[in-house]
Amino acid sequence: MNKKICIIIIATILFLAICGILYHYLVIPQNQHISPEDAEKLCYSVLGDKDENTGFPFSFGVTETIEKDGKEYYVIRASWLVNNNHMSYIGDFFVSVDGKEMYTGLAWKDEYTIETLIWSK
Image 1: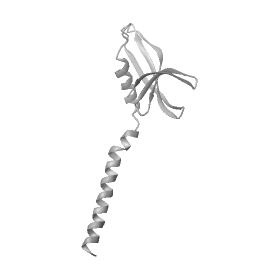
Image 2 (image 1 turned 30 degrees about the horizontal axis):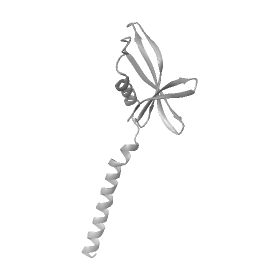
Image 3 (image 1 turned 120 degrees about the vertical axis):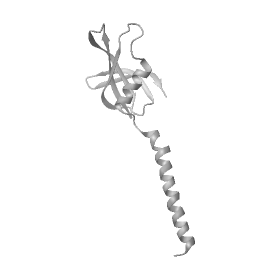
Image 4 (image 1 turned 90 degrees about the horizontal axis):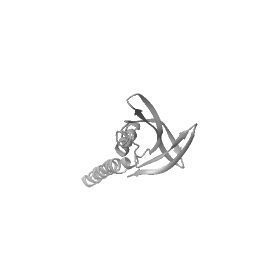
């Protein structure tokens, strides 16, 4: 085989490999989903560890993933520890699975109301 043809083939293969690697690291991460644990961490990051007025510590837990208006969200149940005695439900939050938005809302009997945007990236 001619040396020039071999060099062209090898260069083409290397070029395609580099393009594939760049695509993987530059394009795909923008479309990745955050984990449910990361969604819970985002709640703590946005809202803090405890309520400013009462001092009650928060607890956030992902209960499910839903699709609403063409977008996927983690549904997060929020509670707080009242007087170091018992947990009390305080509401629901919705974190987009891409980790770019967080809303207040209500999840009740398979009905989901996404209300106010409280954080965005």
